[in-house]
Amino acid sequence: MRKQATFDIDSLNKAVNLARLSGINHIDRAGIEESEKAPAGDWVVGFGLTGYKEYFLDGKVTPKKKEDIVKMVSEVMGVKRCLPLPYGGKVSVDIIGEIFISTKTDHLIIASIAPKTAIFIAEKGKFKDLDLLLSDLSKALVDVSTGKKSDFNWESYAI
Image (cartoon, rainbow, N blue to C red):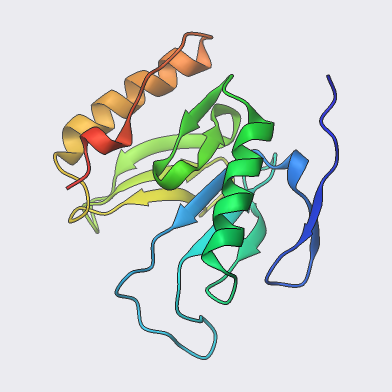
């Protein structure tokens, strides 16, 4: 069945076809100061087939709309060849380049196939045992990429 095009205007004033996104992520910005260029509040970022950011909702958008968008895009993406992300997001394994722990920050990074693009960052202070998280997430990625089902659950690693 073909995905039906569903468009939304993002915070950058672009009309984006949400049915073509290959990843959607909620970014928790608690404790980050508001600035002229970055309003207070959490963000939602959508990634396209090339792994680059193609959709963006900033702190000015209501939490309800952000929740609805994450849910809708996640449902359209389905479960095949996708890894779950915290806060209801998910990402297609086809746009993941690698998963590693940064030697600079000690955070776990899910990197995109697009250069210098992070899909998700698991901060050291928000998740426990990042080495185990890396190991289990890597196994889940291998499973999903080879057609097996994964029951990976982020809540097991949250602090």
